[in-house]
Image (tube, rainbow, N blue to C red; front, side, top):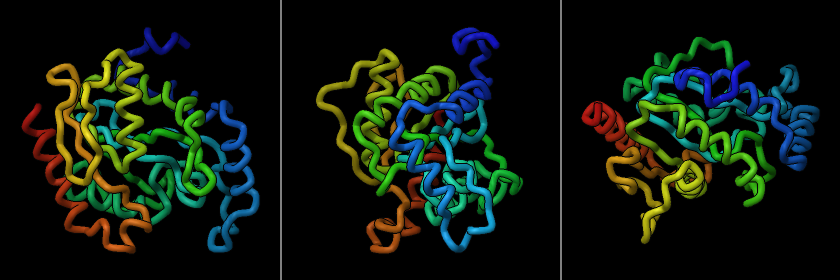
Length: 239
């Protein structure tokens, strides 16, 4: 297989294969496997994925969605990022409303979901204990996002879900050769900036659709759908 630099930019199957095979973070690998062994009672009959979860979507995407990490009983169970938990329900419903997905729900890798013009990734591809990857674990996983930035050549809009995704994207851009502007734009829900001018995509910020945010009213459906409607408008306007 040719090295990534010599493969077509639109072909990310090799990257996803390397994500799944990664063992760089022993604590996270052990946690993913233990969760898959013990399981949750509701899914005791299922065979958990239990390893790093690849990115998902259209390799010709103009919208890049960056999350935090797979959920222990979501992506770590199903093998698809943002699938099988409430955060995924929020995400794919919004992508469907905005015309990026063919259906509003995602329950597993074989449910027929297809994304058009959107690619979904995360700053970490392993489910971390308490949803908190360490800084070293974030750094170990960052080269995957750096490579996605280089190979998803049609991306016009990046939507960062949460502060860690926002920070991770800026760090990945720096590693990809785009020095962080000073002062760096602060994260916030609904923030819209063009931090690298014509050399980089438009960046949108949104609270992550975790239960901590959705159950408390910090993130409402109206707020959430408004961000995706804006992402749709910006993607279409930027061509």
